Length: 301
Image (tube, rainbow, N blue to C red; front, side, top):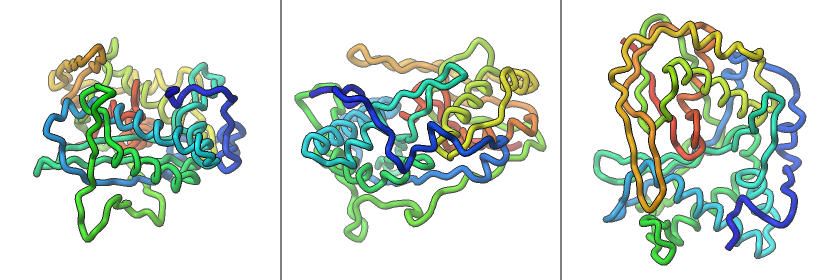
């Protein structure tokens, strides 16, 4: 089977998400925050007996999801073909030298009762493909995930029955919104999943700005950050305590995940940086952001 990122034909952009190549205009970070939309679907499953580190699992879910979309495409499903182009094959170089961000995130959380909550978020205009995306995701879960990185063994992730429900959408009839962030005092960024260690902790905020800029076209607009502005804003962030950030490394069959997790305490943020941090608190940032890396929550005090 070919990996879904590859294919014999040139990827195309569905007409419903065409504005990513021709955005309608420019918006400041605070205006982008006000209009930022995404759809998040969640499903709760029983945790398999032998579950490796959860930081790796989103990658396995992505592979299973893409594989199912590929099977649907080969069966003549045109919507699946467009979904493959949008979520996997599409590669658009931007003027800044970066690539347009993939319009999805996959996140996995272990609940207090040991069960797993799996979330698939479709960002902005990519919501138009939600029917085929969710169908393929559900089938992939039922077919089984390569938990042990052994292609001969697949572990089905069976949704827990709650009123005979399976995939339980969160507010599926409308977009999710992101709450504004005000920086009246120090705050703690609690990194839930690994973020790649940077030459300086301020660099994390530069990566957040890049993440927002690379996803903004999926909202139909470009972000108005000027060249070098992200670096200037990040340099104004005071790092109060980075001792709560701990190194993390996980290796399995040649697959490596590494970075830092834990707490980073910073001083008040520049006003223009606040909406960027707010967006990334839901969209993650940095390498492998679409696969759940670089996730953090924000606490004040």
